[in-house]
Amino acid sequence: MSRNLAARGFTFACCVVLAWAEVASVAGAQDFVRRDGTSFVVGGEPFRFVGANAAVMHGPVARAHYLETLDAVAADGLRVVRIWAFGETAADAPPWQNDYAFRRGPQGYVETSFEHLDRVLGGAREHLRWCGVTLPDDDADGATLADYWSNVAGRTLYWEHVARVVGRTNTVSHVAYRDDPTIFAWELINESAANTTVAADALVAWTDATARFIRERDANHMIAAGHIGYRTSRQREVWARVQELLSIDYSDAHGYPEEDPRVDSRRALDRYVDDRLLVALSRAQREGAKGVLAISSDFVMAHAGLLRQLMRQQRLPLMESFPSGAGDAGGLVGYGPDLDGCDRQLVRLLLRVIDGADPGSLPIEQPTQIRLSLNLRMARELGVAIPRPLQLRADTLLE
Image (cartoon, one colour):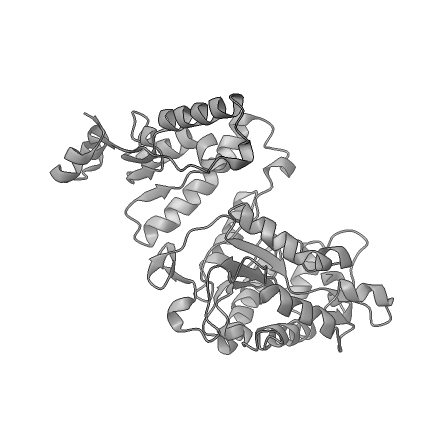
């Protein structure tokens, strides 16, 4: 892994999701990330993260600089990265493709790619041709997808690769992948989809069977479907069927609002976000969620008003990570750094630089003023009782 990191979370597709934290060479059950209702936990404690795809697997440049990439990921505050543990090419492909592929033809595995995956841890089209499925020149349509999801030869070839990855023992750490809490979860595939009823039925069956195939070989790690998500109500029904499988541990979706022709304005983007928030809230409530904690991020800040409105409509208490969150718009609790105080800290540091101080010599300062705001009006509306001692500790009470 990175020189500065021991991993807590990768997702493999078969993607791997990796997450950063200290891990033991022999892990106990408490070291793995689990799902507890609507939350991720490690050792009984909440595990929250921001993550991204990481280009560390395919191509000589990405492989040569994987340590620098992981260092940059950690420096940016990301705790989970998603990487691909697959790649196929023809058996007679030129040697340079070994830097991109895990498999040359149905039987030719590229051990150097697996060894690079070991180091990172501590073309579906070629695949379809091996299975005997004829592909058109453009992207596979719904009928071809149905053929693939139900193709026995294709599933056998895919499962052979999955078994090889899941059952592998790391040649660097000598820890079996199934026993390594570096791995956050297994993701079955990258952006599965189905555009017809027949394809949808076949996709749901394929997802369930493949997840169970992995679970038989690895009882420690979570499993996600890797579904692309949805645009239309029909696609949302298929997505929901996949996510509701008992063999799938948590929901995932890939959002591309910039590629959706219907998202052509700020109002349309709000509807796009609104729909996905409502889906997430509905599932959370079915799982027994009693409230929502909104962690500070650009996304949350940009859609804070919409989020508060939705929480109010769904009658769910909302806690935000800034004191201003407990306001008239619908937040119940705001707790976090006083932004005016942060501005004053910034001005003080800026004046020191103006006076000649070397910026590189100035210490990094954390916020010194943390404030708690409570919205008692919202508490009465939601029927939530806020204990009197907590009210007395609040810096701001909205009555």
